[in-house]
Image (cartoon, rainbow, N blue to C red; front, side):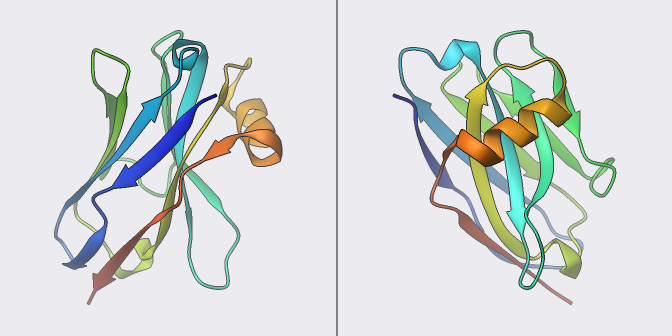
Length: 128
């Protein structure tokens, strides 16, 4: 059973930076892909970034490309989301999620939304 715990959210001014962390535990985590989603008030959940422990691939959404970076530690226990040049529209609850590896990120997102493992979420607020 995989478990996820997020940390690192908070309040930051526009243009600032934050780094989120997601600590994962579970014997089969190496067979999983993990990712960050966010949900702003009144909006659907948005897939922001993904990382596959299995094949090492990463994904960054166009909405944050060039500003956000995803990475993981060598022990495959913690995933990070480094957020730079933050904008007020980045304000949301950020969730860490994990699900087994699939062929392609679109498929993985659909699978994760349906049956993935989720963290509790961490609030990121960017003031203007």
